Every structure is written in C-alpha cells, then in structure tokens.
Image (cartoon, rainbow, N blue to C red; front, side, top):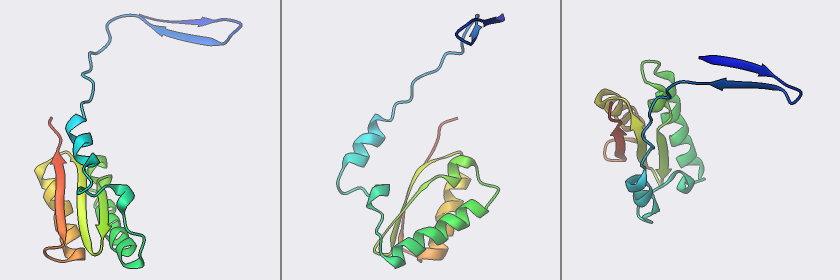
Length: 121
C-alpha cells in the first residue's frame, strides 16, 4: 500500500509492506587483494603516452562491443610498461574471454593479465 502526504515541508512518500531482503555486498577478499602492493590498481595506471594509448585502445574496443554487459564495459584496464591487467566482475565466462581476447589483440600475446571474475548469478 502506498500513500502520499503533502505537508508544509514538502512531499513525503512512504511505502508500507514487505521490503525485498538484500544481502550486503562482501568485498573483503577483493579489498584485501587490492591492498597488496604487488597487485596493480586503477590509480597505478602509468601516465606515459604509450600506456595511456594502450588503455584507451582497449577501452574503446570493449565499449564498442554492444554485446557486452554494462559490467563488462566497466572492467578496470590498467597498463603499466606495456603490460595490461584486467580486473572487475562480468556476467559470464564468454564476456571474460571476449575482453581478454580484445586486450591481447591490442597489447600482444603475453602482455595481458586477466583477473576478471565472473559474478555469481
């Protein structure tokens, strides 16, 4: 049951009934991994021209692929001295492989570390 109440303060909207139960996100393991100094994070993206261009080319290839989900379009792409690290959740193993393939075509064989995770359904 929904009801609306107009008062001198403004419009107040309330909803009664059951709320869907949500399990809070638990990123503890990801946060621990990202605190590790050996693991690259987005803020460690190199600012030299070659690494910026490499990241831009891969990002463009990923975003232009409209078959990929929004999650896949938003994976982290971190280039450091020609080596690319891919991180973040995607919806399927196919998306994970597609992104890795695009990055490898651009960065070259042996220059891509795929740390993308398939999100549970």
